[in-house]
Length: 269
Ligand code: NAD
Image 1: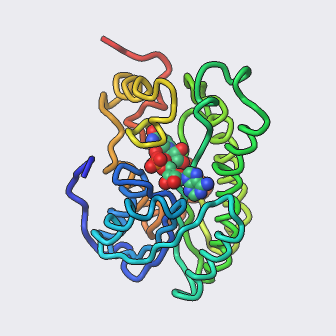
Image 2 (image 1 turned 180 degrees about the vertical axis):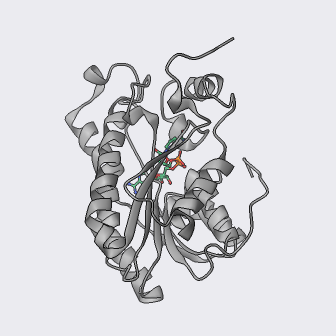
């Protein structure tokens, strides 16, 4: 495993079932979260983006004793309908959903946002990274009769400028607003909606950003803890928000980034 840690085992999620969307490989944030949830007794259904990922994702899913895997591209309404129908048929209801999905074209994730954002690129980034979250929150709420918890993944580029992040920063700002509005709409049903703002982590998504490596370096060198954001920290935060530990928390964006978000002027020694 890329980021091994002693998974805190227990039964915080015993008897809880939920959907994890966005595992592409063993480095995916969704995968770290899944390992932690499974170690606390959760039963998981995984959706993944198309058959080409199946071969990579299946061994991971099986390694934590799970077996529900459904192909679902979030831009395909028919696939999304089928995925949620199949989970409803299997379990009747769910307790949580993790949305760990984003996309923008490589050509958008470099240089000038003003110069490089096309109408089509903007539409695609917003559709996959923001609308899909709203859509999933609605679909999940329909199978959460006893309340539940929904979680999205965001990044500091929503609040501050970050080199190359560009249209994805605009999308993450939308995602964070959508988190608050979904929390408002679903609160009366006892459904909590939150997002984790994670520091830069070495995943496939980061590799798509020009200069992604230096985002990690700056994230570490400027951080208050002087360390990389750990999968352990992000997965632990997800467990907190998705379990009863996070009971009264909703509409919140939780920064898990070794303190990077708190820095105004870095102390570089
Ligand atoms: P990742 O590449 O492992 O995960 C992104 C996932 O999005 C992949 O599983 C991919 O298949 C999925 N996806 C993209 N388009 C899709 C579509 N049309 N339908 C279904 N799935 C689709 O990278 P990651 O870093 O684990 O990203 C997960 C989330 O975390 C994203 O929202 C990302 O913006 C966010 N995030 C990442 C970092 C970081 O530094 N890696 C930091 C903060 C937030």
